Image (cartoon, rainbow, N blue to C red; front, top):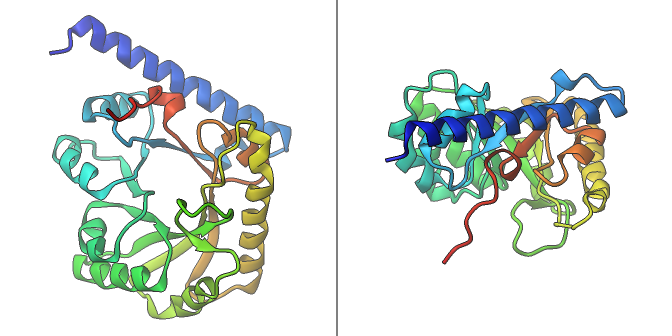
Length: 246
């Protein structure tokens, strides 16, 4: 059992970390003459215990991103009383798990195929909800990264199918760029996604909104904001480094 003194210290650390991240968001937005309120802060809670997620909630965060369906399912009962929290799935989702994902999450930010979108649409209909989604785009060449490749016809297929996916709302795009030690290395990839978003938005497609540009994580979110991100996904900078697998 964590002592009250340690619990208070952990809460203070999370609160201070959230404040520091918000300050960096504000400064990055100001550098490019953007309103910091245009940028949502999502706390990435992969491997983070429910108690620490509650600390982040108490520190003012309301938007949370989980990478794994099973892990979040195990935490869900302990988080059910956090009434104002918004839970997004940001990790890869297999289409055969769409039903459970549609039930548990407020939004799915990692849709990478029409097949998955169709499954989510069917599951959202069964759940009696309209499910916001983001299309995940693969901007680099890394085989380990998910998403629709920039040159794939799958993106156009999905966009054209949007009017029939009446229980989904396509809200924008998401990406995870190739990792570089220097955050500046991610800038070209963020710019690619922003340009793609602008191209799609200019077409005014039925059933397609492009209000959200989810890009930028703990080490590069400031660059992402300078390139137009409307949602940054921050884990390590709030909760500290995750323990390495044994």
